[in-house]
Amino acid sequence: MPTDKPLVSIVIASYNMNHLIGATLNSCMWQDYANKEVIVYDDCSTDGTENRKWGLTKYYRGEKNVGVGNAFNAGIEKANGEIVIILCADDLFLDKRYISDVVNCFTRDKSVGHVTRYYFQFIDGGKVKPCRAWRDRNPIVLSNNPSGLAFRKKALEGLGCSNKMFIETSYLTSQVLKNWNYVILPYDAIGARVHQSTSTTPDYWLKRRVSSPVLDWHEIGGVEIAKDYVSFIQIKNGFTMDAVFEEIGNFIKLRPLNIINPAFWFWAVVAILTPRKILRKLPAFYRKHIGVRITREVKRP
Image (tube, rainbow, N blue to C red; front, side, top):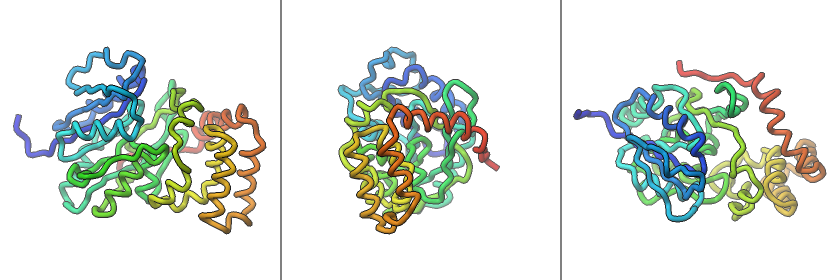
C-alpha cells in the first residue's frame, strides 16, 4: 500500500544473541509505525543464529567477526530507509510510539540529523524494571549505548561507527553533529538488558581495547568523562593493571584538579587494591539491591 510516510530502517547488530534476539524483534514489530524494515547483521555468530526463521526480517551474515562498530556499519549499508535507527540484539523498545516520534522530529525540521532518547538498564530474567538510567542532556553521553539512536540517512553519508570499544556509536554521533542539529526525546525509549555474555569476559575486552577509553571519549566531546572516577572499576574488571595506572594518569592529564580531589583518589585506590573477584560482583550487587529500588522509569507523556 502506498504511503507518504518515510521508510525507517531498524538496523540490528548481533553476535551470539540467538537466545535473546526474539524479544528484540518482537519489540520492533510492536512499534505502531508501519513503514519500516528490520535488518539483522549477524557478526559471524557461533550459536546457531543463522538457523532462525526470520520471517519479514532481512538477515545478513558476515564472513568473519568484525566487532560491534563495523557490524553496525555493514548493517547500515544494507538500509533502504530515509531514517536509520540502530538497535542491539539484546535490547528492547519500551514505547510503541517511539519510531513515530522519531519520524515526526525529522519531518518537522530538515536541519535535524540525529534523534536520541533516554534509556535504562534492566536485569535479564525478571521484569523490565530500571536498575540504572541515562538521562543526560548531552547527546554524546546518551549515545554510549547504540540502541534507539536515530539518524537521517543523508547525514550518515561518508561516515561510520568507530570500532573502538565504548565509543562505537558515540563517535558516529559526534561526527553527525558537526553538520546537523539533534533532538532528545525526554523519556525512556529503550530497555538495555544486563546479562552474562561474551562481551563481559576479560578476553573480549582485551581484544577490543586498542586505545585509552578516557582519551577516546574526551576526543569526541565527552569532556565530563574526567570526572567519572567509578570507571576505574570498569577498567580494572576488564583490562590489566597497566591499563588502570594508564587511565589514572590520563584523568590527571585531562583534569589536573583531580590530583587534589579526594573522590578521585578514593576510587583510584579502590580499583588498585581491591581484587577483581570482589570488584566484579559490586556492579551486579548495586543493580540488584540498590538500583532497582531508587531508579524510576520516565515514561512518555
